[in-house]
Image (cartoon, rainbow, N blue to C red; front, side, top):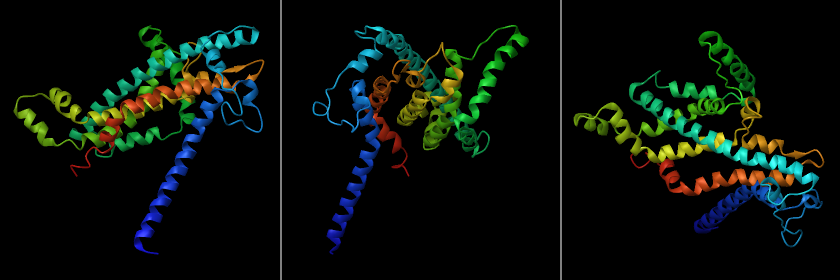
Length: 307
């Protein structure tokens, strides 16, 4: 076989492997969206019905149930009670995740700059912090629960102030901020290290202070990296389940927790509405990915040209 034919064969095998891997990755998403348009009889049918308008008739019944559009009857009243919660779940998740992600990005970027320029804690400090986050969430869930139940007693004894962290918005925001902060420091440190020191020296010669240099020189240069980091942290917080399940409810209810709770005493686990909620949960992340796609490419390739 000639070299040219071997190259074509190798390219064809690579494309086939990539296509197969893409199908494997996208299959759960396809299954979720497909199930969200099936009624209760089609969820459990066997053999599985794959093709809309051929094997089954698509319906918006599940979406009407979770958003409480046109629901009547005893079973639907049960759905309707949980349908109210999906609006609360969307509002709670959007508020908590947005504030926690932005706060984690700003604080982590400032800490990454300090580590990069002042060698705070040594060169390996950021990686040491990251190892703390390597612990599985199930390991830290119970200690966090003890913290959150002890903090009000501590503040009450010390300052005579009752400060609740369990099942509060600021409690979950603080939790997400602290759990994602190591990732932000680690990722932003890689971007900030690539910013030439000469630019900062030139700004200092012109009279700029440290805060001004960070705000007007360093952060604009690593803006694409900050966008990538923000998206990474946003996805982590948006899909976080175990800690939110342990440290919240019923006042604060995020969408992943609601997804697990959505079931009926009459029909058991409601796969159709759960698939519809899963689709709704996925949409913001997909939209965010398309919106910042240009920044993602810049962020991941940051520093390559310079090196």
